[in-house]
Length: 189
Image (cartoon, rainbow, N blue to C red; front, side):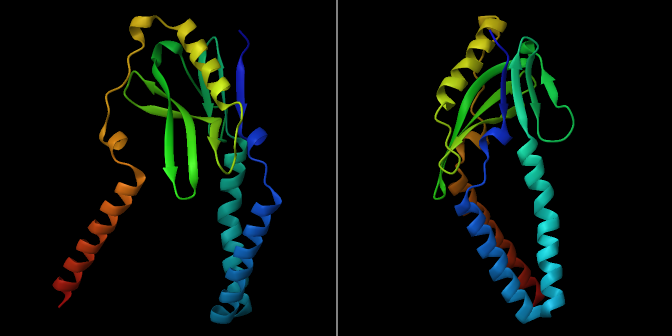
């Protein structure tokens, strides 16, 4: 079988609609900042935003994963990445997240240490659809099944983070923040 490579730069192509949305956000931010902070403060705010966001965009654009005889190599945009040998890969599945912004799916692997890792570049979402996601995921699973013994392929137990959806987490975090804020207000009086 051929080595598989999934690169984010092949998937995350900015579209005109994304560019327009970014320009609208920067325009609104600049207008509000210019009114409240003056032209110099607005320029500093926009420059700071760009200085923070540009490196994150470059790192996301440079991320990749590969699957081959040595195992699965993951690189999150910095350095050469890390290879996880097949004997360390206990399970491979797809994490599905449904939200108001759209649905997304990402391939992930579970290691013998209990840790989990997403495979950058092997993802599907409404914003960045990948029509070959299911086929590519199946190819990764084929590599894994051919490279490991069936007795080593054990599905992980459901952990707390598998049971709590992002919506439930947001509700619990909101309640916790409200309680802490209430306690602080009571203690200050």
